Amino acid sequence: MLFQVLYNTALLVLALWGSVKILIEAIRYGKHRRSLKEKLGWQIIPYSPQSRETIWIHAVSVGETKSAVPLVEQIRREYPHLAIVFSTTTETGQDEAKQRMPNLEGYFFLPFDLSWIIKKVVRQIQPKLLILVEGDFWYNLMCAVPQVILVNGKISENTLNRLRAFPFFAKKLFSPLRLLCVQSSQYAAHFEQLGVHREKIFVTGNLKLDQPRVIVDTEKWKKELGLNSQNRIITLGSTHYPEEEKILPLLMPLLNNIPQLKILLAPRHSERCEKIAGSLFKRKIPFALFTDSLEKKRTQSLLIINTIGILPICFQLSEISILGGSFIRGIGGHNIIEPILQGTPVLYGPHMESQKDLVHLVSSTGAGEEVSLEELPLIVEEWLHFPSEKRRQAGIDLKNALQGVTGKTLHHVAPFLSKKAPLKSI
Image (cartoon, rainbow, N blue to C red; front, side):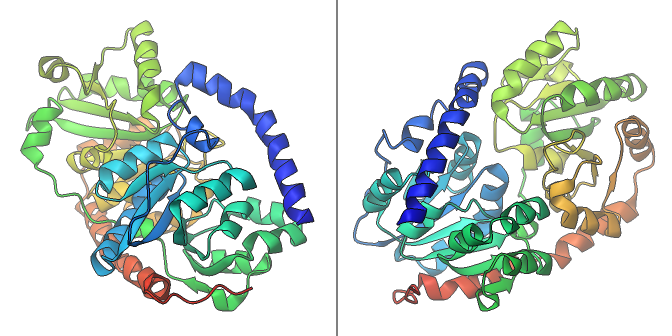
């Protein structure tokens, strides 16, 4: 009881400190406007349990949501008696969930982890099980739900070192977890060091690496994007500020050397597209938006993808992908396997601190390459002039080698989905 009081007090202090940042982001970028009422418990979540048992799945943002899709689809097929609700922390994550998994029973934003808000939400949803995707460990949430398990689990060295400084808190935090399906033996060791019993932990692999290739009507999407059969296409995806300002000036000269070249720019957060467009306009760099007329898209060599859900399609239409979040400090990189799964080799920057396991996979197979900003235009031009069958085949081989993670994960999750789930240990 004392621990929970101290925990709630600490959260309130952090919430007050963070409210200024939330307000600034809401005013400048329009963030949090759709999610804040649900997060504060002021708005009733649009879900009411019926006769079926409810499973609650939570993912933080877009990347975690994408990785959950094959697992959710398989649960849907094999356990039709269950109702599934899906929560996210970010608005882009929820948009992704609704687009990729349109037939779930409910979607909502994860409330702030204050006990009185969490208890209210749990009473409404009445979940028999909470499945966390990758992480986002909140003590009040995990204590309020009858069963909690982790899939695609990971914990970085930085988080490990912070939590090891507070062993009592770490043990309390992870004690509600009944099962941990983690991405690698390294992450399994991290959880063990934080007091999680080894018998709860299973290394099942990374769900992000088990994504199906998108089936694309190539001609339809080329027309939608204003492309033709002669175009050479590059996708610059998942970028963060100020990566566009650093990368685009380096790539624009290639448009003169390769007249049929098209660059598709898909920022990580679509709400930034308006600001990016304004910056390009001021710098007199011509562009079109995906939502512009077809004629305008045909005449411009730079196209901003100002909608969500079509990045995998852009990857599949491209000869080269460049993945952002990796050319500036503080992000840690994104899933560089994603374009490879769509059949496109990838270039990424030197700041992949949060994705070291993916870097090892890609670099060791030759399906992608780390480059600095200075090297980027030279490597892109080289790849365009000398396409590599070896590089393409390396991507195919890597994709084939990574299949099966969803099945391994579901094997361990299955006992919690049956009508007689294992009892929660006290």
